[in-house]
Picture 1 (tube, rainbow, N blue to C red):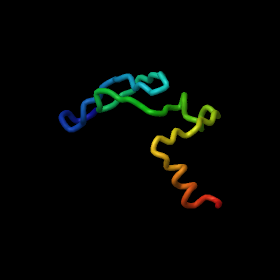
Picture 2: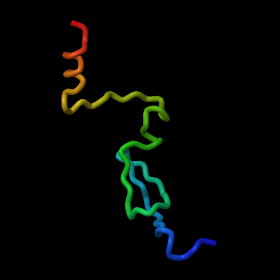
Picture 3: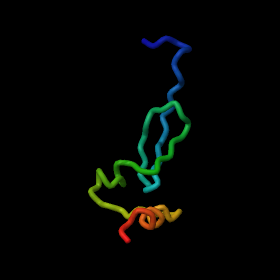
Picture 4: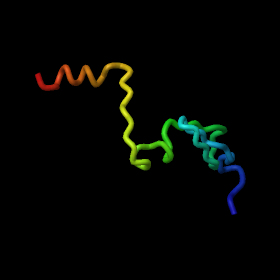
Length: 68
């Protein structure tokens, strides 16, 4: 038995990942969107994806600290 009025309301929602996978979960939020899930994460899939470097951070790091 749970006391009434002290617990947050739970919602059954579908969590959607960027890869297209969907999971049914219980949460206090009304909607959930994921960037990475177990279906697309490199640790679980064994596939390595290239890092998308949109701000040039890798090149900047290599210029500063890389071999000359």
